[in-house]
Amino acid sequence: GSGMAFGAKRSGSSFKSKPRPRTLAPSTGRHDHEYHVVWDEAAKVWNVDRDDDATGLSARQQSAAVDLAIHEAQQDHSKRLDVIVCVQQNDGTFTTVWAP
Image 1 (tube, rainbow, N blue to C red):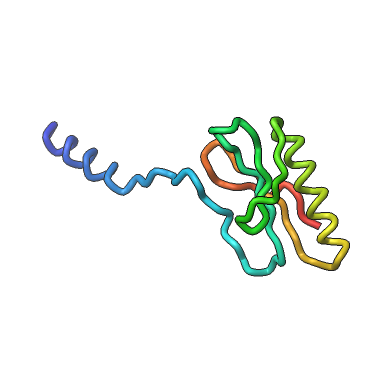
Image 2 (image 1 turned 90 degrees about the vertical axis):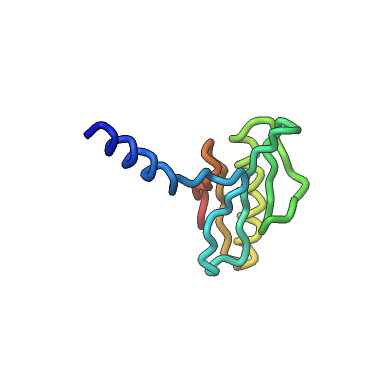
């Protein structure tokens, strides 16, 4: 029965998908703008993107970049826009860190 165990193991790993390096938080369409704090490996900085467009804001520390993103989001929110701020995790997924 040892041969069957091998076959089962091989087929089980075939559907494991690697996370893509750039995964965006699934947009529900409810938000006017979504800010993403994204790690830039080449520049070794955290960049702040808004709706996938670079804002030109960046910081070496994740917490500082998040603060910048939240500051921008709060300005949008003051204009009655619906905004959220997400930060990239180690596995490439995004977690919401601020929402009005």
